[in-house]
Image 1: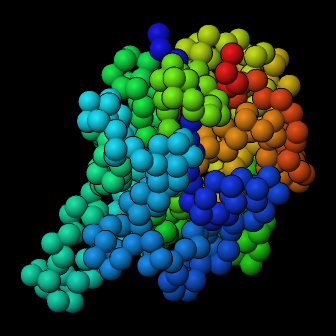
Image 2: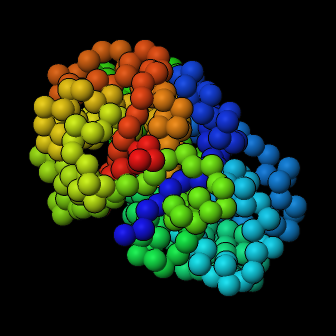
Length: 414
């Protein structure tokens, strides 16, 4: 079976509009959660989020801005960064016969909700004839993959996965499987999400899923902490270049890490609530280890789903114990969401970017705001500051509405 490696990274999130800035700030444990100023939140119960700080006009001219939703813009920018990072910025100069084996698989959980809200207002105020002709191609979920394929000239398979908070996890799993099976030599993969809109925020508020620590946004997202009271919405994008090992080696690519395994299961229990026994996530982690050919004691770190909700954090902790047994006490576990918020369909991708960098640099970021232990969360959650440690192998977990459980195993190149 063919091996898969990671040769390029790109991201946009609340702590940086490129990988170098975001990684540095995450290692410093900085806070990306702020009071929302993008729109009026006086009627919303939650008034904080981890928003991307950017000016779209700096990157996209007026006509493009009318045709693209933010989640697609971010995917385009992060894809360009990841391609540059992989040494493939001139990819369109390659022969079509080569690019026919280069694929695009990108996930999103919500899709173009910004465009939906904007054009719905146009419909109500000005009538059906004034709705933009770009409306459908702007808001359709697969725009996030299709526009990237067009931009980069990737002629292989191209599609979008959508499975709530596991969306980009499934995208990356499909990318790994495609290369392993010999269908592609390179896959641009990951996910993007821009659901921070009045309607998107209102929906999560009504579901009573969000932290209401509006007066202290820096302390609002606190995964695994006893005083957690809900997750904080985030937004952004993560893109990774998955490449067949011999293909990468032949062109002299820098290799960050190897993608070794993938596990995907479902709780088959409830559309929003995770099953309390933790068996679903535990099976996903077990499958990731099995496909990687690893024993539990060969894993050093888990980048947890770690949302900062009461049920998720305790159930994920239980699942880790089920999957790892006694070795669970030796694992370092941390949550990227403690600083970047919950990027929904993009969370898996941004978190795998951070996990990959942990392997490459031998540093694991902390869980911000982890100060008061919870008896139901009894693992080592890397409180305080970032930890220098060799990371031979790691798992990155994503658990989504619908009972979706994804675990991806990445590690040092053997």
